[in-house]
Every structure is written in structure tokens, then in C-alpha cells.
Image (cartoon, rainbow, N blue to C red; front, top):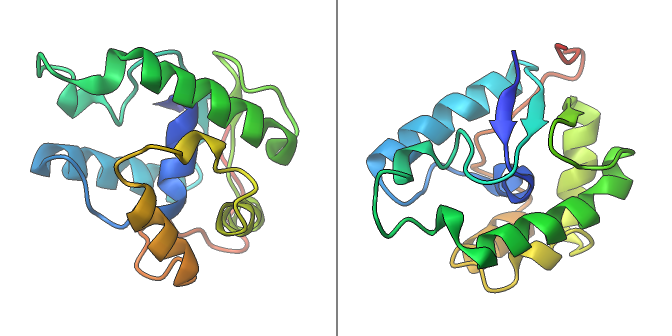
Length: 148
């Protein structure tokens, strides 16, 4: 099985520390982080994904906004070279401890953060990156192989 994930959430997971829009959102994101940490791959989707699910019942949910779709495009373009593949709907991405460390280093250096501009969480994520990603919830074992 694979976790349905929109492109910009690949950035969000790097600095996710258990904060979010609502308790249901945090609970859902915590479960997704556990799955990813266990080596389950992600499958790129267009539009709302597993992380968005707790918000989608709200009439004001931003998940369908053009600005979020643009954020996905920017994230896919920035991450593709780092992941060695085009990030198009249906693409599968498997994490490893090494890949996670590489992405976090690129995130901290600002190399993959074009999609973060204007995000309400941008400053929190910047603080987390500057603190060496202390307190983040996504962890992977060095010898854990991704599942396909």
C-alpha cells in the first residue's frame, strides 16, 4: 500500500512536529508519519490527499484553492531533482534514512523551499530546520529498507 500524498506535503513532512489545523488533522498526520517512518511509500496525487482528509469536510477548506495547487507544482519541480524522478500523479516515492537526511539538509539550506513562500507554517518550519529538525516526528532507521 502507499500513502496518497500531494507534492507540497512532501515538504511539510520534513518539519512536521505535531502541530496542525485541528486535533483531527494532527491525529491523521501523526498516523501518516508513522506509516512513512515504517517505510511505506508515498504515491503522488493531484488535489486533497490523506493529510488533507480531516479538513475536506469544512466548506472553507483551502485544500482545493488554486494557491495550494500552485504550491504543489512548485514543490514537485523543486523536489524532482533531489528524488531522481518526475513528481507526477501516480509517481511513487520511497523514503530511506539517507534520503530523509538529504531532503532535510536541502530544506534547511532553502534549496527546495520555493513552495513554502506565503505558507502560514513557513516560519515554524524555518525555526524547526534551524534547530536541526529537533522535535520532528518522522524518523527512519538507518537500515530500514523502503516497502514497495
